[in-house]
Image 1 (spheres, rainbow, N blue to C red):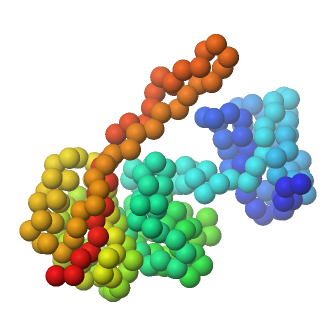
Image 2: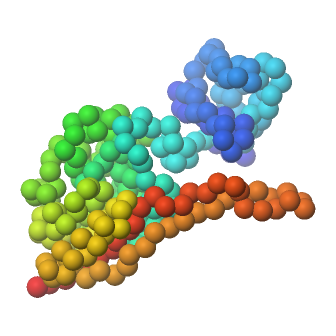
Length: 258
């Protein structure tokens, strides 16, 4: 049997792939949707995976929201990275429990959240942004998911330098990543990862040229990741008509000793 839902925690009401709702469970409260309202007392004290019916009889499946479910609902002052890019960054940069990571360009904190989730309980994310509004938005989002304790958010310019040393990876989502090479080189441990996400190939070209001049890094991979969903039904299985294609280019490099 799944874990029992308690008052005060969040539940995911799943209608279909495109219509999902996160609701905080409170005694005696109702959650209103275009498919009728749901009495939240139907969920409190019951296990994950149940089906509840709205006031007009529409069925909703009830689960605990995943981290991505929460991130999809984040307040967004900027575009967020997609799971396809986030997952590859975490795997390819070998990010796990205990890692110390610099992230520059935190935006709404989407990538920050997944980094924090993977480095906890002993790791740390140092998130830099030059926009105070983005810092505060990311803070609110991280507080909602309970991950803020693994993150230090800093108002600062990575081009001018960072406070940390001997970190395991530095992830840049900034307009001119080549301007950060000196400060990132000083902050990384030997063999540490430099990861850059850029929306245009011109940025990638300039970054590679700058790395070749700097000589402090070895570029190990440059790629973009595309994902395509499928509609599966007997006799009608085919790709969906829309897909998540280009979002950005990922560059991976390792720090080498000069």
